[in-house]
Length: 345
Image (cartoon, rainbow, N blue to C red; front, side):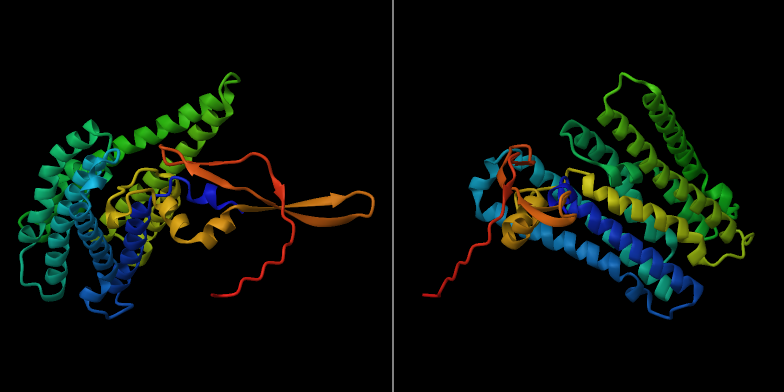
């Protein structure tokens, strides 16, 4: 078991977001089906946990930024801190939308156009944020999603308030366009991976990467497309499926995203003021976990006496490189039992 390979390039922010979205989707579907009679404020608990963690992490990071000015000159400290503030502002606007939506579902005292105003504002400013993110080599998945779906948010608000009486298949036309482009990208990735497999002069690592990318994109796009088809039929009254069965394809997408978060790289170093990759911070805070990650197990068989004896080999982590990756010494060492008794002072 090698914890280095498991946690290398781990992105804790995406992991937390996808876990919370998975739990919220499951609880929300159960609430719509009447399987649970919880208040909508309780159904939104995974969302509140996500937003609370983001706000607390940004506050702690800002306090450390203000208290220790010497940390600001470390690498791309200013870029990371500005990215954290931008992300915090988006999370606050998104929290306003979620609070209004939850209150609307619980009491029904607002119109949906008012509820969607923060989300539409996010979509507008996300265009400028995407340009800034490309310039500074930052990830912008949420900003890109909001910016390309501004028309979809307007259609949803108008349809929910009965200002338009279109079929839900027509209301979701902006999403159909986006998903069609995504499906074309998936087909391109599959064809490209097939070409690389049949090419003999291609590096095996590159071939493996292209195949993994094609599989990952397929598990992301196809379930979402199936979910949209089922949802449109359900809202139009043409389907007898429960809401839990309707959203079940989304579970496949969320599980795939959770696994992909272990190799997503990126992540802001200023959340909670840790100023380093989460894996490095975790190994530094938990020495026992680091010692466990240094040990690998192999089983060697003796041909003479047909007995297999386990051999424990340890690897020592060297210092972290500037790029945030850990290097491991190539010479294995056999552990020898040693008795060491330490008495407290």
